[in-house]
Length: 407
Ligand code: C5P
Image (tube, rainbow, N blue to C red; front, side):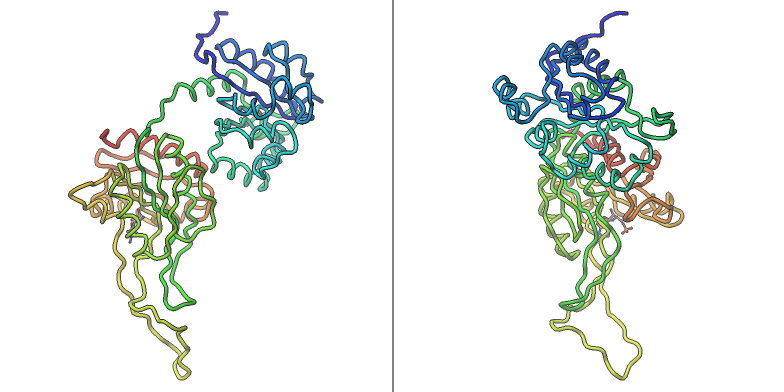
């Protein structure tokens, strides 16, 4: 067998190994990373050492294996902060359900979790666990949290498991993981130096000091796009309606409430941007008047009516610019004739690209963690199959980066 090309020459990879039967495969992973020229430091959790001995990894990596947070001898050689700074990539393979939970919770009660908190390196996770544990909502929520913070998730694959179950939870093979690491170091960020503005979430249109009109948008898609654009090297401004989501690290967030406020923030931010993505579910109408005091029931009437005025179309306003017009992307959430309505919107709003999704589909659209969309522009359409919003966001950003003109 020929030696692979030194595609990872002198890349500094910290390999975290947690407790799981897949830990035996990590020995092979070290070899594959070393073969490609990488420098590898191995950190093992206590659980990992129950499955495989540190000596194996010491021999394969050519470096002492790190196992303790509070070992004075190890700290004297290379302290944990030094190790955290040394790494260009932290790859945890296998990443157990326990490790995912700890990282999502920000714990620092052993060496590996502490390193992850202390390091600014890219974090990649190769989960491995029983299929029921992988499917558990607690694990799904932890994965979602970590992905929103910018962690990469490689796998798991589905198949037969060491415990006899069949399903998702198998760690990716060492070869595949080494290829992912190569891809990561090869990829030049597609939106490096670009300014991206994204609107997200619902708007709230006040009726009086205590009531408003709004909708069920969760903001998840817009926030996932912001994280993906950041990962692609962009400087991102996220204009968010009222949502219950954490700001992706490194993203500038502007909180707004009503459509007019969102429009003003969007117009200001768009002056300097290359790409504008309208992912917000802006209320179409707002009450014609906002009462200064709480509106009282009229005792003698069983019905009442509300005068509404149309809100400005934010994304169409940006796309209508003659000067300083960014590449403008809109969304079309539809319940029927999805493509037809989306094409119509693309033209009517003068957008460069529209992302259409069927919000009536089960497990898709509003509030769901998953989505399936079709991307339409003047040249045609392409369907992206159902995926986690975080994964879909990365695909959408890659597609937008390809199509946005280079300025
Ligand atoms: O017309 P419709 O609301 O279906 O269009 C959806 C697209 O237009 C989304 O990109 C949304 O963010 C944007 N939009 C907007 N301002 C509005 C209404 C919609 O930016 N007032």
